[in-house]
Image (cartoon, rainbow, N blue to C red; front, top):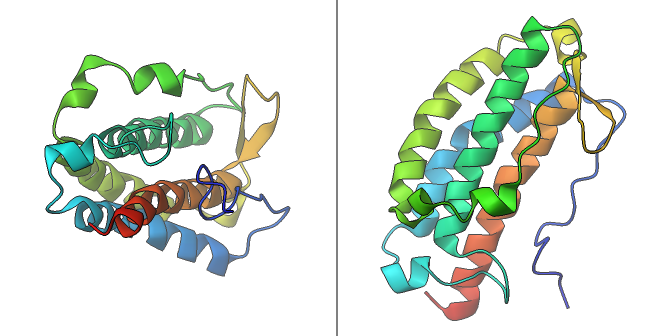
Length: 174
């Protein structure tokens, strides 16, 4: 049986990312708001409030989480480009998913993602090979994360959560 938590598998970082890898990842980040909007189009409030797995987040929470997470990624990108190997601020994503505004329509977060990704992708497309190697320190893992790896990870992250929604829809025949 497939692990419902990781419908496309876990993110597997590489030691090296080619320019083609980065271009593909940026394209996936760029298209995510449209793909998410399509995935939730026509869902009722009851469907939006259905968890994608037992004890998992609801579709609504997943969409709001993606916006929260990608806002943090954008800020991490800016810190990395403007500071010398900064230590980023981690956040408690499970608690963020429970704050009051997460009951709002998920289209609010789709709209936010559309604007955010327009800015983020615009920046990502300008990065030079040396900038792609710049990194930040993650306080929870103690690891340095390069921008090329972060870009690949967030492309995976969007696809990962999109698959939570599309697999639920397919499994429920929505």
